[in-house]
View 1 (cartoon, rainbow, N blue to C red):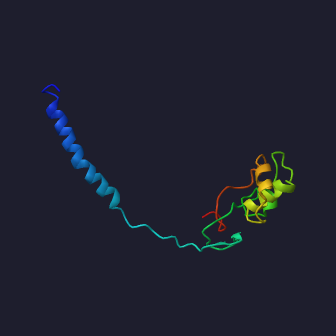
View 2 (cartoon, helix red, strand yellow):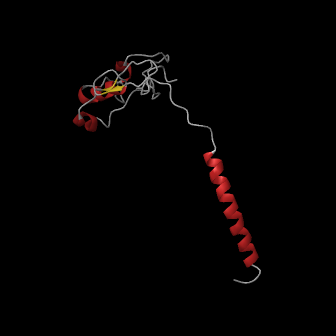
View 3 (tube, rainbow, N blue to C red):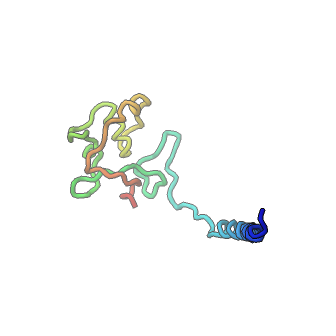
Length: 128
């Protein structure tokens, strides 16, 4: 290395050696983690719907006015017609109003969608 670059290189290396431990200390010196206060709502049968304050939520169906509604209001195809068969079973499960669909139902209904009145907000408590 030319003489004029060597002092700059040493200064940068020394700065990096000092800054790295300080950065690591700062990253690890944050507040302790917070344990969730939700209720454990998973059993051997799967997620238990309707648990107030449950840790795992489902989508919440809302009507046109924004009020919580039955999943059947949201389980519609792109043309606004009610879903049927496997697509309906998958949709109802997504809102916590039906059993888990079979593997065949889950893979064959990938093209169905909910209507615009449904929301994707999770939680059985209104999405909060």
